[in-house]
Image (tube, rainbow, N blue to C red):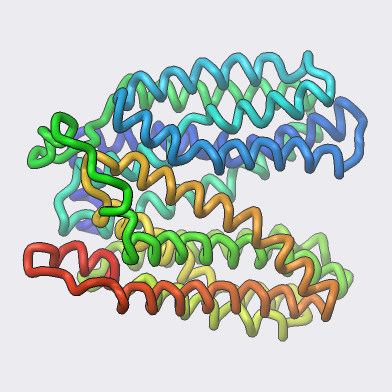
Length: 401
């Protein structure tokens, strides 16, 4: 735990982690809040609710590199506070909207979502030393897992027992408060050595969006495709076993194991390659289809869970190391978009496999997607030009982190 104490002792880091956790937990739950509003308040179908959630998710996926580039150009505070204002207007207006208006507004809200995740990753890279970054990015990955564990569950609980309108306002308030907190903190996005990065010419995209970066982004898509597929396969497996009510417990076990794995990995002195962690995660996912009882499924899921946060943290670390300072915002935005695309792809891929075969096919499809992304990532990394001595840290980040 010494490594984590060192990271949290960095001036401003504890406040950054706290504000980011608040914003990300609410952002993680925002699609769920809209689904509950459409189903319970507008009394429409789940298909209609899924359309609104898809519009919001599409907007978030498209906006990542655009908002990142704006941050590189205009600075963190201007962009974050602008998106905070947009979110406040949207969520306050949700109860007043008809379905057709909400569908369009959700897309706009996604395009102007507070970039809490990418800003946190940029700030971590700027505020920590190289030896501290593995632990810092592990904490960031753990933070993401906690937001997925807490956010949607809280929204469902309150929407079912209070009103979906109040829940929408609550989610909007949490996004606004968390985002405003980040904006007021205005954490640095450049190290001391990079202070003059914004005054120089912006590197052409072809220089930094190279084979190594493409390899990391491919693996970013792969890991979230796998995770999105696991969730659906768990539900399908337990529904067939007549135990679907236990799905939440299995997903909770996955989340807790991921948090544990992230904390263990971040405390280690040695890193592992992203492609290796992702490949192991894929291999650990495929056999989950052999479990026919929720207890066995939960037990088997522990290994996959232990590998999840470490894999996510190495992706973030690699992107931050490979991106030149003037374009780091755009690069971390691309990472966020890649991961959003993977989440959107994972459930349909697993669902298609389940429909063609059996629930076990969902786990197989998710695991194979992870293995394929790991293989592509390894191949592209090996084909990239050899790192020069001055680029050793980048080579380690891309292959060893």
